Amino acid sequence: MNERIKEEAYKLPPITLEEMSGIKLMNRTDTKYVATINQLLAFLKAVEGTYYIQEIDGIRLASYHTTYFDTEDNEMYVMHHNGKLVREKIRVRTYEDSQITFLEVKNKNNHKRTNKKRIEVQAVDSLPAEQERVRPFLGKHAWYTLDEIRPVIENRFNRITLVNFGKTERLTIDFNLRFHNLLTDEHRKLEHVTIIELKRDGNVPSPCLDIFRQLRIKRSGFSKYCMGCALTNKGLKRNNFKERLNLISKLENIQKNSTK
Image 1 (cartoon, rainbow, N blue to C red):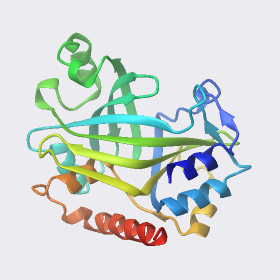
Image 2: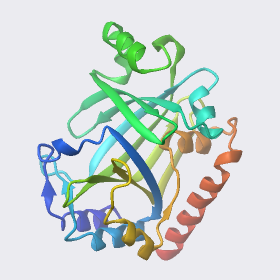
Image 3: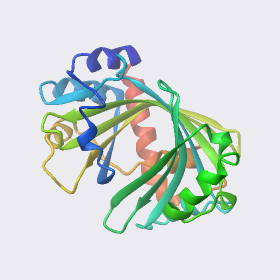
Image 4: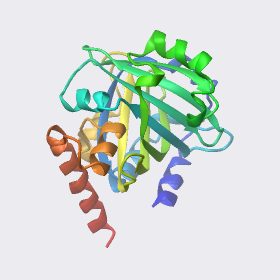
C-alpha cells in the first residue's frame, strides 16, 4: 500500500523547505480528518494541479519518531479527554531522515488556535543532560517542569506535507501509524487509516474542503498522543474518545474488506 501512496505522491510538483519558509503557520488553526488509505489515494489524485508536495533530498514520504510526555497522573491526557479547550502537549520529535530532534511544547487556547515552541535537543534520553537549556525553555513556554513529566508513549509514522498553490495553508497526511506505550509495553498499529490535518491561519478559504466532501472524508478530532494512549492503556478513561475509537475501527474494517 505504501508503494501506491508513493506513486501518487511523486506525481505532484515539489516544493522545498526554503520555498515553504513563509508559511510555517506556527500560530494556527488545525482541522483534522480521518480517512481510509483508499480515500487518501483518491485525495492525492484529486489535488493534482492544486497542491505542491514537500520534498527534502528527494524524499517525499518523511519518517517521524515522537515521544510524548505527561505527568504521573496523566494530567495532559485527562484534560484533553475531559474536553478542556486550553491544554498542552509536550513531546520530543525526531525527523528520522535528517536525524534532527526537537523538544516541542504545543499550547491550544480557548479560540482553538495552536501555538508551538521548540528547541533542538540531542535525543529524548538526553534531556536531563541538557537541562541547562531545557529547564529555562520549559519554564518560559510550558506549564510543567522537567521533574514533573515522564515519557509515556512513542509513535512512528510516515508523513506527506502538501502546500496549496496559493501558499496559504499546509496539509499534513500521516499514515502507517505505530504506537508503543512505554508504561504498559503495549503495541498497536493503525495501518489502514490516515490522519489528514489542515493547518491555516484563521478560516481562510481552502481548496481541499470540496474534495473532502466529494470523497466523504469526515472531520474528526484525532490526537496521536491521546488515541495512542487510549489504544494501548486500558487503565485510562476512554468514554469521551469512544466515538473516535469506533470510527477508527470502522474505517480499518472498511479498508481491510476492500483489499480482500
